[in-house]
Length: 103
Length: 178
Image 1 (cartoon, helix red, strand yellow):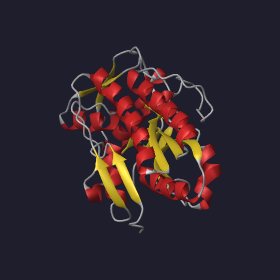
Image 2: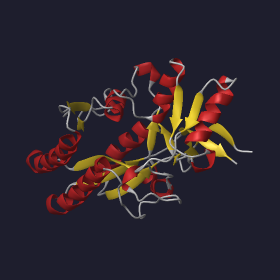
Image 3: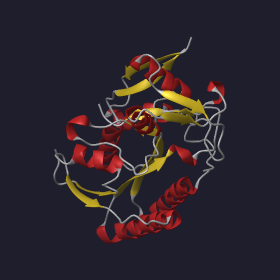
């Protein structure tokens, strides 16, 4: 059974904090870099609705499948291992509250 | 706190920009920049590219040493696997294409002008900073979680753009703030 669980990671404090640390990091050393900022997990729209319905009870959210639409991105899931390794020179003591899909 | 550090936030009335402004305002000296929204979407996006180019030119005049650019996960090729920074980029829509063009312009100009840069490719940012009353609001609403809330409050049906639960689109959500 697939469950959706809200969890806390000791990794990224949050997006704003990442930007703040980015400012400090840039002021400390030469840096030319690209980083993904994400949770390392993905959840489907259906499972997200199911999660909310489980929380709300009695299937309060009504939905229907309208078919695939052109241009819709099917999956977007981040690998955040680069920023994890870099962690802005050790400054980034981080916690990110995310929705994590637990299988 | 370091009020000697001066930071220009562009797009400070947008979702991320507004949250960031509230987050940083006690720590640094902030300068905020917003631009008018064009009704024509293509014009708006073209303006994004031109505005970023102009800002890059201005870095030379202002002796700006560091740039942080907010990009999007949508610059990547639609992929069934996790995407790293080395994954193939192939944006599907014009907004994401404009982000990628801006990224390339920053990288090229950095070589010429010598400023540092960090490009963050944000995945699906959700949530709000409740104590600062700061969050996402669009008209019309385009983000999935606010759509769910709005439909729930109005007791309306939510459209899922898939054929079944098995091919429902997947997203990587991150919280803007704790």
